Image (cartoon, rainbow, N blue to C red; front, side, top):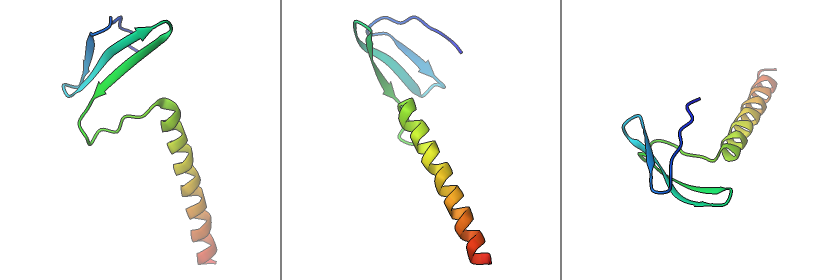
Length: 71
């Protein structure tokens, strides 16, 4: 993991087309802005993990249904 120090108004560029900017800092909260191409999904980690969990559940259910249909 790369750890960088940034101040309010400063940015980081990833892969030439994604910019992560520090918009505001208040106490322990940091407001981050992300500019990325529309085809690049950007999620909060807890949302991403929930999507992954639901996708895994859907695949498992589809597999069970497919096996039932075969039998």
